[in-house]
Image 1 (tube, rainbow, N blue to C red):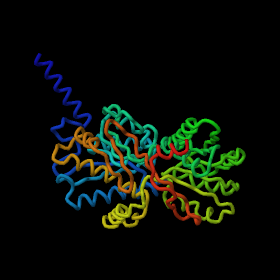
Image 2 (cartoon, helix red, strand yellow):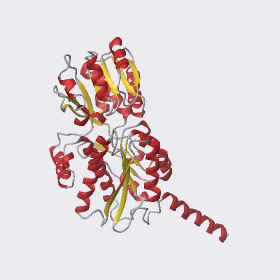
Image 3 (cartoon, one colour):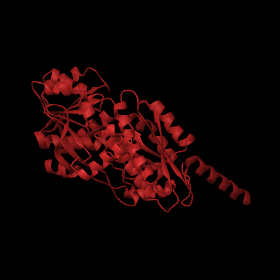
Image 4 (cartoon, one colour):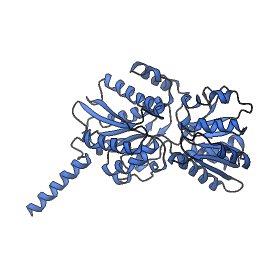
Length: 412
């Protein structure tokens, strides 16, 4: 009998060592009395460096602000980063390195659709808390994350692309009376999930609404055939279901073929860096058309915007004080820090951290409210609508932040 009990105890200890998560009374991996280690793998070189570099800068600035103020519960936050170049294979290797070798307490700002898609099973299997995903793939949407195996340790903040696709349809109907929705979508998770959301909402509406769709490759340099299909089908609006690298090509393709239909795209493109790549073509287009994007940050909240600008300026990255991707990183840092603050006075381990994240709603800096209670992992569903200025240089607020369900209700 004693031998059986010993074997059970040994197995239990081994399991706690493998997962890095211990009981409510002990510390988890990556935690000492002085430091808590967190990390991410993100593209800080290559085609997506223009997104990854300022995004990480936002995280770093927020943590430096926290550390300079004395840390949280006496601990400084140590941030470890690896550059995966937007390569899923490298992302898997680096994520494993963060968990197993660096033994970080949590992943923060898990970056990019391919990275997230390739590592999601690993994150669930290990149970490591992962705070903020810099993408909105459908696999993150979860209404029943009530156990580690079901994704209890995953805490998305940004909108989910499927939900956003539904929202785009509602906006297109409300702004332009659209019935035939054209969709140029990239053959990746972001593009397909956005398309799925469009199709779901059109099916819900029924009646005279329809979808015309055409697939392109991510990063495509020639989208003329897709544009021609939209032109020949005479769609009412066009959804550019793609992220940063492909949107400029789509816009230039529409201008080149004289397709002056309203364009709606994802919040992932709501940055001056992205539109700078088509600004000159758009400003001089003979038949200019409106270009819209959703946005889940509220730039009308002056106090929170100023806090971000001052934080970036005072804590090491003034060059990104007006960068939307840096704002996203700043928000990721805030959520990680706020979760740690909620565990103050208790042993810092995975179980206590997850419980703290679920205990009360969060106010998103420069955004709405999000709540992880009862296993809900939905991302934010409150977004505003932006529009590209006539000179193509900036996004301007066109409609205020509203909840998805309120907008859908108006266009039913």
